[in-house]
Image 1 (tube, rainbow, N blue to C red):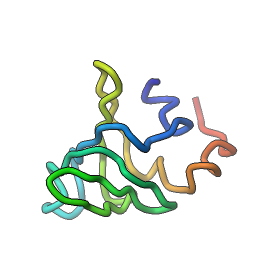
Image 2 (tube, rainbow, N blue to C red):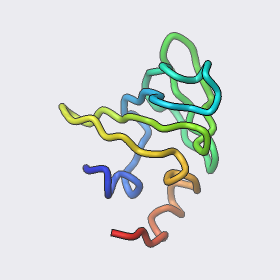
Image 3 (spheres, rainbow, N blue to C red):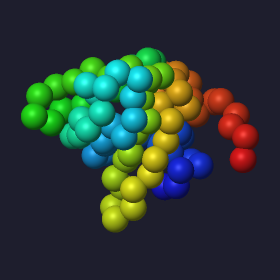
Image 4 (cartoon, one colour):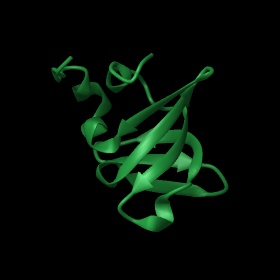
Length: 88
């Protein structure tokens, strides 16, 4: 999994951290992705957070790699993201 192809992979179960966000209280939230909808990610850590995708930059931990991605690229239902064409 790389930064280019993470949009086609399942995000539920990955460890995620909010790196940047338009709302300062969201920065630093980390935990595991519990659920994903079209516009939000549910992250469980110290508590359960529902994070809008379009306002955050996220860092996912995959094995020993860390992948940063802008949440705007993740907008859309997971099953519909597979059909989208992304610029390479």
